[in-house]
Image (cartoon, rainbow, N blue to C red; front, side, top):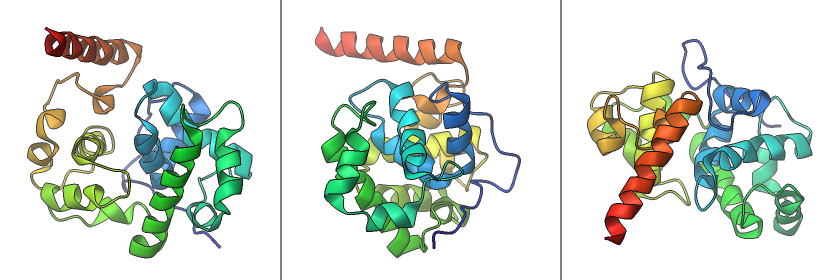
Length: 203
């Protein structure tokens, strides 16, 4: 039986604005595994839709208090792909993402006994946390640094050197990524930054 996840921090849970859905954001705030999955899905689609994916899955699985990591890891792959693909799908490419979500779930079960918060709870340094995030299936350098920055800026998870390990995403006052989104205005600022970066590369 899957355990109820620990909060990402021993402090008061943050009020997130990542999917701009009250129930979806509340799930991301209280369930570390849902947060990890939301970050996984945040590619090739709008940020808000990506981070709403965990809530869609939790609803369909009938566990709206959490995203059941053990159940997902043990799910029949074909059946889980169907669950992820049911309109509204959890991603633009729900079939392939379903497999990646299951890979993350199995990693959390094997390496952290099903407790995703353990990924960061006892990390002694920012670099140690970065390496743990980088080891998550489907995570690369950029995704790992962004989640590290998000944990530091909005969850109060700040092991020694966390800003440096997050790279430019950890900069105070930046508008580079989801780590900096706290309201509609900051979301637009992040979008503007990304558009400017894309335009600069196209020159």
